[in-house]
Image (cartoon, rainbow, N blue to C red):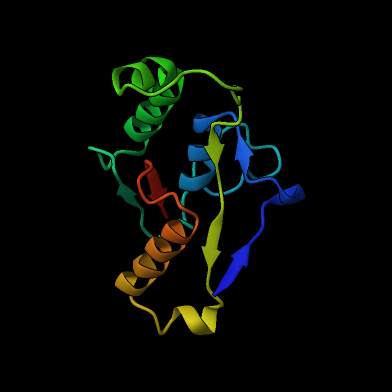
Length: 129
C-alpha cells in the first residue's frame, strides 16, 4: 500500500462539493471547464450514510456540518469551544499496480476500514473510493 499525503501536508478543507468532484471524477484536462470523465474511479463505498449517490452524500455531509450546533444541542453536547471552518478531512490509500492486481475489493475495503478506525473516525460519515 502507498499512503498519499495531501499537498502541503493538509488533510482538511471547507468544501464537500469540491472534495466530491475530486473523488468522483478525473482531473480536468487543460482547457476543460468542467470535470466530466471518471475513468480513474473504479468503485465507491459509503459508511454511515443512507445513500449511495455521491451528490446526495455531499449534500448530507454539507447539511450536517452546517447544522453542527443544533445537532450537538439535540444530543445534549456542549456547543462551546472554537469552531473550525475546516470541516472536510481528506486522505487516501493507493496501491502499486503490481500489488493492486492481487487484491480484491473486500481486501481494499478492509484496509480502508482499518485505517479509518486507526484515525478514530469510524463513527463519522465518509466515502471510500
